[in-house]
Structure formats: structure tokens, C-alpha cells
Length: 320
Image (tube, rainbow, N blue to C red):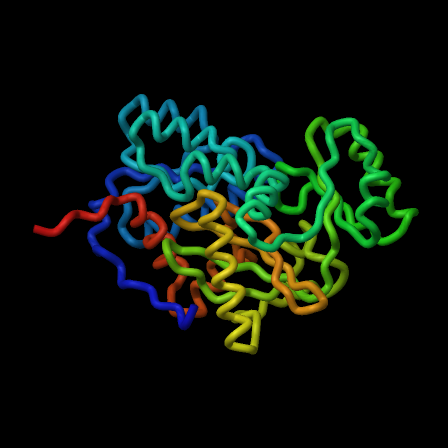
């Protein structure tokens, strides 16, 4: 994969979008981040003349659709029903266009374990992991994989419920969390060669971003609160490495049934290999978020990025 080549926007008339519901908030553990992202998207669309309005959660969206006030949806509802295929199935059945991947890609990638299994079946590299069933023996799974590891829920985002376990004594809080958590967990090999993410916009992988927390690891605080996390874009100095990581991210995105836009997280092994980690189908759009940083690197500002994402919901018109 060579330099980033993005086609120009297909049109410049905001009336083409009609009435756009910017879906945000909701009830997941990522509600506050979603509200922040949604407000930023709303302001960006309004600044470009789009007839956009905020909607908080799926029930309110259904009410607005029933009232005939929605022509399309900009989905920025992080986690839960915003990314697990429920919203996508609802909108698809109602014939309402929406941003981001469809039902299959959304449902699959919300589940980290199943996504990794699909990648393995497709011959794509991912970090070694062990599935921990509800009520399963977390300590045994961690020991089987070998320290150091991360333990995380299979269906949460924004580093919610993630534990870094480097030694036996680090197990205690993770075991306590697992005892009260109803879903599946996974223990995943901790990689030390660098943390990267690659934004996907249509058929194009944007420049990679290398994430360098000032201390510790890229947890919720480093993602959304701290101002000392470094984001290096492009994330790799070597052009061949940059091409490899972008190619791998796009392959992983497509293999997981995704289209539209999203973000693929990648880690580098100490031996130099790149390994797929997970896919985010409604990435953050806050001041700390990574897809806007990558888009800016190729000359696409925040307002233009929101326009391009929304433009994906308008079908191409066949030529004469």
C-alpha cells in the first residue's frame, strides 16, 4: 500500500443529506465519551450547513424516526447497542441509512474473542489469547498463557475493565472483577514493540498513529483525560513498515465484515511483527481521538472528516 490517495468529496450541497440525527449518549459504560464525540460531530455538521440534530439513545431515535424527522443517522453511540449490531439491524429494517459498518461487522467486532477467531481462520496475525467463560478460572487461564498479560472483557470498549497483569500478585483485582462480571473475558498476550491504531475511511487506510502514554499503559485516563500522551503520526518512520501496518489493518477490517469507516488497533511484537488487536466501529471523535488525528495528517480537517463519513450514507448515482 502506497501513499494515502483519497478521492475528493462527491458533492458539496448539505441538502443532499436531508435531516441527520447524530446519535450519541445511550446507556453503555461509554456514555460520557459518546456525548463528547457526538457534540463535536454535531457542531461540525452544523458548521457545514447540514440539518443535523442530537438524539440521546436508541429509544429517542426510534421516536424521531416514527415522527418522520430522520433521513439518515450519524452513529456515534459508543459501545452497547450502538456497536453490537442491534442499532444497525433496526435501521436497516426501517430503511434508514447510517454511518459505519453494517449488522455483521458491528456484531462481530463488538466481541473481541470472535473477531480474533475470524482473523485466525483468515490467516491474519493476532496476539495469543485464552478465552475465559463466565465463572471460569481466570488465574488458571493467565498462568496457561504466561505473564505478562492483559485481562479484558470481550465486549466492552474504552479500556473498561482492563487489567494489566505482570506477576502473580496482580491477579487479585482481576479475579475480583471476574467474580462479578457476567460476560466472557479474555487473557491476551502483552506485547512490547509499540501500540498503534489505523483509521479506515472507505477503502483507504489512513496513516498509522503510534500511541505513547507518558507512563503506564493506554488506559481510560490516558485516552480521554491526560494531556501528556504522545500521538505520533505517521506512527512508523520506515515506509515499508508503514505500508505493511496499513495493509494489515485494512485486511483485518474487511475480514471482520466491516465497511464504511472505523479504526483498527494493532500492536507490534518485540520481534517486529504487527498483530491485529481489535476493531472499533464507532470510533471516538473527541479532542483526544485518533481517527481525526490521522485524517488531519493527510489534510482532512475535523469538519471535512465528518462530511466524508456522512457522505458514505448517500448511494453513488450510476452514470448514463
